[in-house]
Length: 284
Image (cartoon, rainbow, N blue to C red):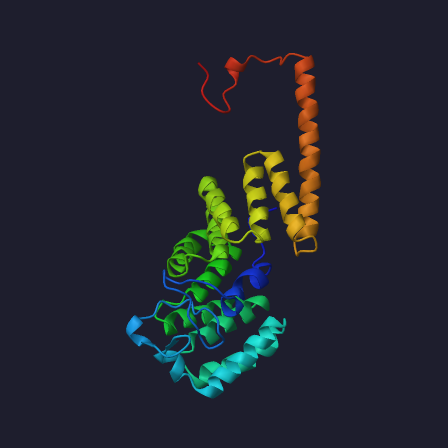
């Protein structure tokens, strides 16, 4: 495994989640209805919320033209059916009908990212951030994933932290933060956030791969094997399952060879005085 965990692997489990899932809290406020009965990831001014019988609806949501809502719904349907190219025409129409439709720009970023259009994805995520005044978490998440994929970990860290301020319950966000921290070689912090991601979302299989990488860097091969087994249980046919299997066999072989070396060392004294070894510290 290397540090470039595939951004495309996250699309189903992560980037589409804000557009389709239920139950997300944003900025410590309770989940509220948006145009598709989804969490908005938006920290809105309470004065803009119109109360009525049933779910609350923001003034902004009521101002979205019906044609824009319909186009967004069609685009999201194509996107969730693994037709990102087909989704773009509808999402672009939604944004043209309602220029501040930050959810549509975010979905366009997801579509472009799934097509490998990195520049277009970055531009769409930034448009979503601008249209929402930086108060919508989705594009912050998307942009940070893109930057991690590009190994721009220093740039990604503050963006994902901003996203988590807006949506502190979003488990995959902690995975992305862990990914950035791993890329910055801050292994303890990366491990902590990967576990936080799994605590909030126990089925987030990529977090186990990241933990396997962390433990491998520490030469804790047994712990890495545990994480690889956990990943393969959750995603036996996942995008990185073949690579995980090869990595697992590599570690098993490494552990076996280490065991043989230890057994040989017990049978034969180490021929070099430890006092002369200076690799891990100064000799006395």
